[in-house]
Image 1: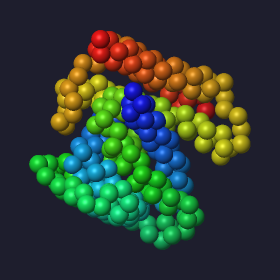
Image 2: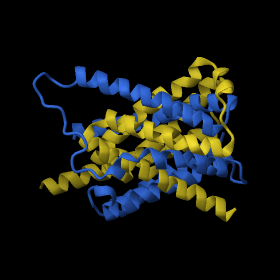
Image 3: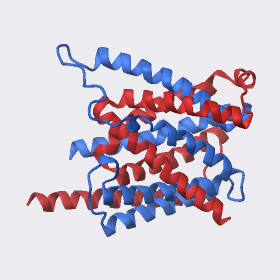
Length: 149
Length: 155
């Protein structure tokens, strides 16, 4: 169990590293090129991994509905925007905002997909996330004002 | 202040895009495997990003401005963000199938991302701006993580 907890924690650091590299690349090459390199390099890297795992499934993929391919298009936009904000906001704030946006949207998506209202626990979670963002926003604002004096 | 708000809205919106992306990718993964679905998404994403590069260079750049200096002063490994991005998928497929399941995997990955943010900002990793992370930010981070855990496990 502890091994898997460590692996999942490590995975968060791996995600952060990816976003940091893309963010730095975008300062020089622009966010869209950074997004292109991220996807092209990632696709190349996954080819040997797929063969090693014996998971090469082109036939099965063609059976998926066309909307299933939208994920890649949205991903291209995500990496571009995330790279743009990364070096402007820093690793910490951009991670917190992406997490907040992702979690609150997941609640909305599940509500739409399942047609059932979210549980009380989830609504409470959304509220706590919003309080957290507001606290961070206001603390940054106050510091800006005091440094301007 | 308006610029900061704009960056905040963009970052928050990118999180919404991430949730949408996972929504569609998991549809593809149900027909194949998570790794293969990720490979397809990377391929489609590369084509889409290339289209965005071409579109933005036509539209966004006013006539007469020189093109940005491609790759100047950047070490080549700054181009390799896609490698940790792909490793994420491999690591996640291990932990999702463990006793952590999907919920636990997401929760600990979020904690790991915040830890990365704190360490990266504190030490100025990857040529970012070095700054001290203040106590009130840690409180805000804990609230956002606690709320996320309620969302993940309260489904």
